[in-house]
Length: 382
Image 1: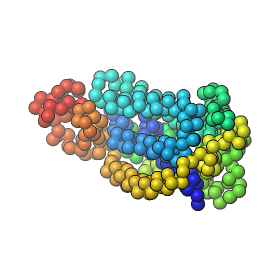
Image 2: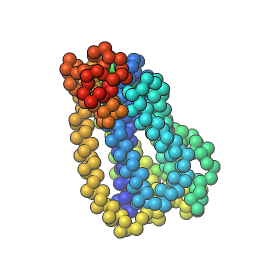
Image 3: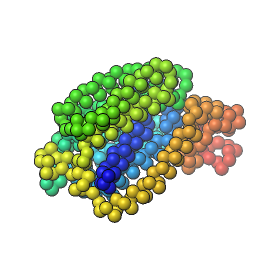
Image 4: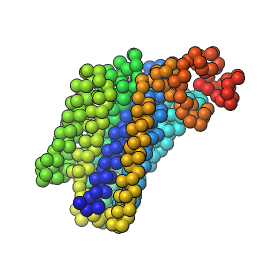
């Protein structure tokens, strides 16, 4: 297999990994005002993604880095054509990260919750719109200039892709909360999946049908029919999600949802091959894995680097997910809750210590946000 083809599929796989890992924490943030009835509920929801969400962004950075290093022409044209949506995604993710950290360090909790919601809902919609437009072709000329601006991207197929991505991520996040929470909040999260799942199925069917009319993605599948196992895996994951949810096997249902997201992403990527950024104006303007790649020497060196470091990143993340696998509760009583008091400690604070042994403002009447008398290092505590 040519180096360009290897990097094409690595590019698609990295995006799929980001949507799988980042998808659930974006989904949790989007569900914050719906499932978080009380401040305690919202705190538990944030704790459920607290030690993991920023690590998940590694895959976004890696996917962007691969686009820049392996396919520099695609990177240049993509960031020109999609300048506005990509900038909005960047601002949303920054605002979201700041809001997650600040909500436990200031009194403006509701304001930062709005930031979490906006920063969690906007990216999946914008990513969905962007990838749907890539699937159907972007109106770029021979110089890589897009005609029509942002309005050209807000077409029916693009908007349908945005809704599809949003529903996938919300379902993924609700399943993660069903797995990581307990009690009434867990029941509400599981019920939320039961409402989101039918909507996801309907939009998925519409998206697959529209794909047949708006894109050429099915051409590769008709040429190599064995590739149909990829969309079938997405369908199986979606059906498996509902079956496992009914049996209250929440982690397995989350894994099935992850399969759906990965397979759905790969369905589009493999359907594109060898095009990376097709033009809807003229096939001669298509940017492919072969006419927009870096030199073979660059691709070879990067392949060695990726072969060494990607397994390390995967192993580290698997270890982090294993460490933070316990259900989260708000009382800090050994249920694996981790507070986000970054500004207090400079790091995530393990609250697994039994409540009776902790001099914490939540248990001794100290007003939140005040300096605790006699505390070690004089640290602030919430």
